[in-house]
Image (spheres, rainbow, N blue to C red):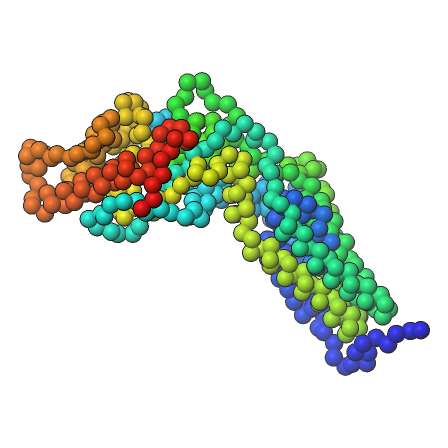
Length: 445
């Protein structure tokens, strides 16, 4: 018995260009970027995903040969950069003891992004003036022993792929039941091409690369990651801190430098796009609706994966690799930039007060580089206290030092020094950090 095709004889037909371009490929690209972050994700790409042309054009540039460069023109980026796992410029890093001053890369960028997600704690003391709030995030980097393969997130988000997979299979089966072989074959082609591409790309393994050895006798890698507003204080050995400042993610893909398998997948996606563009008008209205239903379900799932914030997932994986857990990361909110400077430098000076390599004035100038007489005198006074082992931080300005300063400047200097004293007191009384993380004292106002 031959079943009557729904909507048979209807004069309405979906335009081929409208069907093929109904959904964009940005969500698909973003969703494909999570294939290396979730366990089992590479096995769950068997659904009719939209945006095949966008994906083919983007990933085809990864294949590196004259043939592939002619077919997919554009820069041949590294795999990690292509999938959004590398390539972001990081903040400036300044070490407090070794003198290192450099621009970090993608892992430094992720560290700054992670610091923004940490809930901050207000410190005690009312500053004389409150400008833009400034935060200090302290990260104690653990002993990084294994920098080989990076772990992956759990499978619970990836398992939601069973929904678009089921819908794609059901719509494909429905087209076969009603003998709409054009729609059946095109949906099946979408399922196969998407599944193969996801599997091939997912075979790559994510690794963390950084300097594995350091010169014997180097000082600790304690230092600052600086942004125009907030700062991250890194505490740890040079070897461990180097992972953030000099390390990067590496995506180890099969196929050598040519990445032929990725090129073949891109070619398959391009063929899928062209065939769907040409043959969808030959399908019945019912088949066209089934095709759109499978694309819509896949688009919803891809949009869900896009909303999971790939950078946050990368940051979580980085923290696990660096063994930064629980109290090893804390964030504190200060009233203004000068209080932030004193607070952050107090953390770095702890245990290094008598170390000649610790240049307190230089570290303060990273926050407040002003060269006026008031600021120069402020840095000199604060630096002297940072180099002092005495816990009771008091500031005394002699008449000789005040000579030449007008009344307004003297009042301004007193205000700045009062803020510095409050920042010292907040550090010592509330959040003083011994060198051992197990003895850290934490008191929240």
